[in-house]
Length: 246
Image (cartoon, rainbow, N blue to C red; front, side):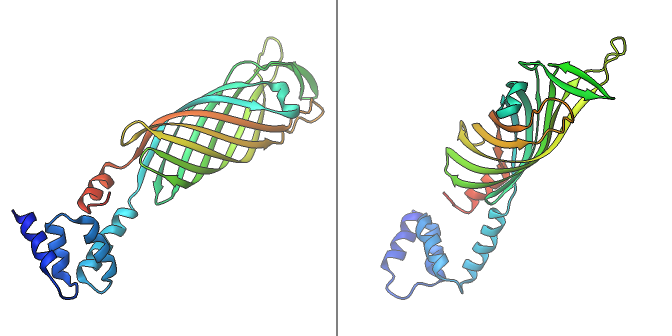
């Protein structure tokens, strides 16, 4: 009855739109009209209050966390090292259209081919491989829909692998390649529920490996990661309903 009365009173009004109209629209549950009119009335106290609450909503942080697995694929001279499976996790937050993630994964299994590395003035032929990646990704969302989101990613990371495993009996020292790099990628997110998602991330970089006197194994590399995670904020979702935002 309250909804019908408010709707009837609003439709019967002939004068210029005022704050009273905003109350009538709210009570009649004509929320789209309420938001449109409140935006038009920039001098309204109701509009000022709504804007203040809306900015709180827009600036709320959203959690981004989950697991990732995939494959690391080197090209050029570095293809000697071979493809390696990757497994790890990521955690970060999103504010408006910008997201910042800490991401980590390990790269495993032996190299496809043997190559030469030098350590302590001696040459070693190796196919040992155990690698890792840790980095900070900054993402900007190109598209945001209820079921699909597409962030463009720029990563700053430390990448590399162990090429020799220390063996005292065989007099083999340890040897690692640690390489800072910048990478760029894109992610395609599909939401299974309001907060859980599956995504595919593709990113590429170039690794300059300092293997002095050894085999040249520098080259570009691509990583493809399948992710499952949680993205969003329960508090922000409640606030969204409070503001009647679709």
